[in-house]
Each structure stands twice: as C-alpha cells, then as structure tokens.
Image 1 (cartoon, rainbow over the protein chains, first blue to last red):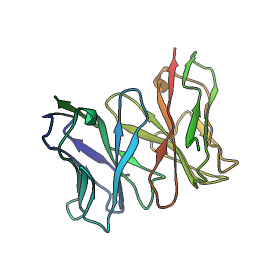
Image 2: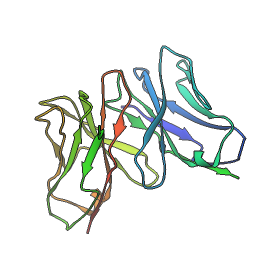
Image 3: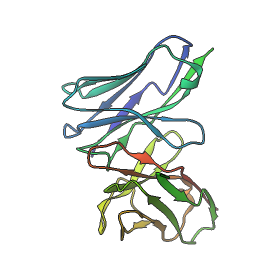
Length: 112
Length: 111
C-alpha cells in the first residue's frame, strides 16, 4: 500500500518568514495530494490540493509543488502569521479523496 | 448546510461494550470514510464507501464494522471495544473530484 513520509515533525519560524513542509510518497498510482491544517481540538481542514497533471498550485500565501518523478510534494507558506500556527498534514490518494494515506504531521509554530 | 455531522462528540466505554458512531453528510457526496487519529501517527483509514450499499476496508479495519444504506449516513460500529481503540475518530465525505471534508470528531476512551 501507499506510504507517506512527512518532514519536519516540528517547525518554528519568525512571523513574516516562510515555512516549507515536505512529503514523499511511495505509490506511483497516487495522483491526488491534499494538505490539511488542524488546530488543537478541531477537525482537519483542507487548505490546498494538487493533482498529478499540475506541477504547482497557489492560493494567496499558500503554494504546493509536486515532483511526480521524485515522488515528493511540498507545502510553502509565505509571510507567516501567528494564526498559521497549527499541525499540517499531507496526504496522498488515487483518483479521489475517498481513500487517503496521511503523513504523520508537522507542528508549525509562528513566533511573533 | 451542516456539512459532515458526527455524534457523539465524547464517549467512554468499558472493555467489551459495543457502540455505534454516527456520521451524516448533507452535501450529496458519493464517498464517505472513517479515520482514526492517534498521537504522532496522523490519520489512518478504517473503512470507506463509494456509494450506498458499497463499502471496503482501509488500513486498520479490524474491530470495526460499517454499512451504507443511504447516501447521507455512514455509521461506524465497534463490535467489542478494546483499550487499543481509544482514539479520536473522524468521518469524512468527498465527491469524485473534490477534497475530503471532515466532521468535528468523536473522542472515544475505552477503559
């Protein structure tokens, strides 16, 4: 089955700096890669996703890049703010979001 | 539009008891899934469904049962609760081309 590895497990940045979280996947059949943000005690919320026919996708301060050959994808957050502090999860799926394999999460702390 | 609704939010069970976690969605999504979240391990897929009457196993299905009689509802049954099933359970729904949307979660403790 699919295996998703996520790094780093914790990340601290100064407010205004950029943050990058990286994930690798093992199954070449995976073609859907969402990212979720989870605040303490809350549900995971979809923040951005990318499909394997696209190399990069942006939404305001958030971007995701995908390297299908190397089987890795990354989340980039620019101009970080304290409210960006949360746990971020990457995931991989085949064709749709019905059957996702998640990474183990990255605790992002944005220091004011 | 409530999205994905889970009940209950909290539950304490004794070892050996059975219970059903409820999940309902009002977005007319074809797909529904159950995940469990344990500290440091991300979310792991228990069971999923691609439509009414169709279910399949995920990564960690043992000790759980599901059924999908309607598009809206996807209950998860714990047959005989064990301490290893202490976890936070999330239900999710998605369309064929969209992202997965999660319910608010059920925090289950088995003593």
